[in-house]
Length: 160
Image 1 (tube, rainbow, N blue to C red):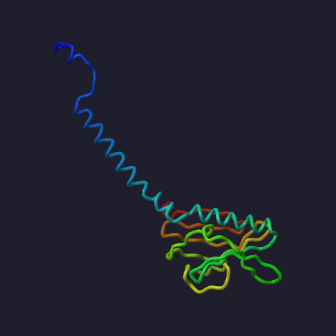
Image 2: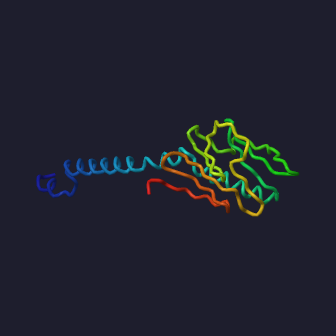
Image 3: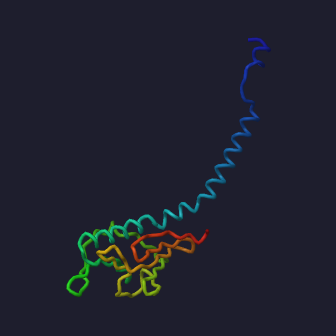
């Protein structure tokens, strides 16, 4: 190959390749830095709370009995209301959402409590008609899961 043949070939110079790699690195750094909120969103298991609330609402409608979610005393359980009394239901532990100690709950009466607080009243009650007592779960300073009286779940971001 002669000199003219080598210089006539098309391709990228080393400087062009370095500039492209630097730009790709810069862009990926920006994307990873700005998407860190997604990791927090996943770590607080918002979708797990939503799925569990939907499960309890459907369970109440199918059994035609009020169903309650009890949280407190460092435990959680569900119970159904029969003959004027709450009867605990057996549910595998892996179906319950994982609750952080800093997660704050607010029941329909406006009482704020945490996972470890002593408590006898249910956090949420679901009725066969599809309604619920309502409440909210504050996962951190940024996200709150709100449950309205129609068992609808909304995720509220304080960043908006």
